[in-house]
Length: 144
Image (cartoon, rainbow, N blue to C red; front, side, top):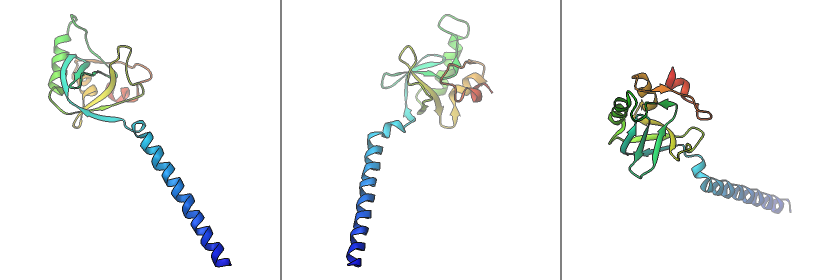
């Protein structure tokens, strides 16, 4: 009798483990996008020194970066420099906290290979570092 009870107990434990595993896998499948923070894309065109349009038509704004607006001194230089860094190159876009800004543009840190574009454009003097809460995780690195 003890052997039969032990067998049932082992089967019960296995059943509980299988149910738990199914639950974990189901959760991960349903929430996979919650864990996705990096994306790779290509640029269609550069709008100005801190924003651009992807091949899929979505607009992106560099986080922690501010460049001159159209008509302001340095606009063309900043736009041209950003273009030289990202146009026709594979980008990795990394989200901070917010998905988009008030204009519907995706807010992202941008990398081309190992080059941190947000930092590079500030380091080279084409932009100023600006902190806009809550997307400030890497601003210290950009302005440092």
